[in-house]
Each structure stands twice: as structure tokens, then as C-alpha cells.
Image 1 (cartoon, rainbow, N blue to C red):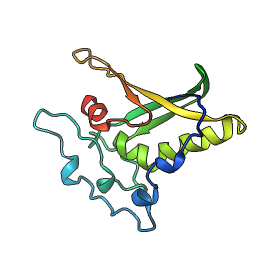
Image 2: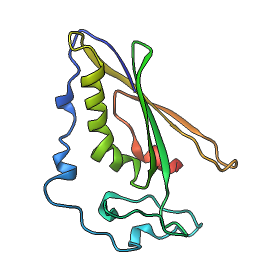
Image 3: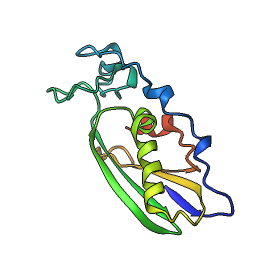
Length: 157
């Protein structure tokens, strides 16, 4: 995620509120294998959507019922890495994880790590999906600002 100096302040108010995703009512409990968690006809495991996710569950069953992945992210400003982190063993679909967790984490890192007397603007976001299956190619995709087309990313998983 890249940020560069700009004459205007970074506008966090343009992002949707997280309350619409993780408001006061808890997510419905998922059954042990919800309908959307069934392997596809070609045997591929599905992504776990927020509606099927149970935060208290570990999802470590064998055989697995959904895709497990690791997400690595990096914040850069003026072409320099400011912060980077890994989110290991995720099961929630990347778009839902972004809405529920990562967007606010990024907001907090920007507020903490970038100089408050300078203004920064979101420039672009690069997403890389690395796959272990040699028959599939990795995906590297750039998006304007933080407007990530999650369906493109999730199709690659």
C-alpha cells in the first residue's frame, strides 16, 4: 500500500464505517460445514465468507473445510517501507478480512507511523497472490488508491 506526500490530507472519512460490517450484533454461528463451505465440483476448497464465519472456531479440521492462507502487507511512504506485517493462517475471505480487520489496522499504522505534521494521500495498492500449485501463475495486480477489486484477488485463491 503506497502513500505519497500530497497537498491534501489523507481522507479517512471517505472509507465506509466498519460498524456496517462488525456492528453490535454478533455474526451468526456457522454450522460445522455451512453450505457455502462445501468443496466445489472440481475439489477446490471455498473461501469462508463473513456470514459463515464463527470467530470462536479454530477451523483446524482435517481434512480442511475452507482455504487457509497467509496475508503479508506493507505500508510505504515516499518509496520507503514504513511498516510491514503478516497475518498468518487466515480463513476469512480477503475482502471480508479487509473490511473487518485490516482496514482499521492500516488506519492505526498510518496514524502512528506517519508524521502528523505532513499530509499523505493514498496513491495505489499492489496485491500479490502467490500460489503453491505450479500449474497456476501468481497474480500481481495494482489498484488505484485503496479501491481493491477483491473478486479478482479471491478468484486466484
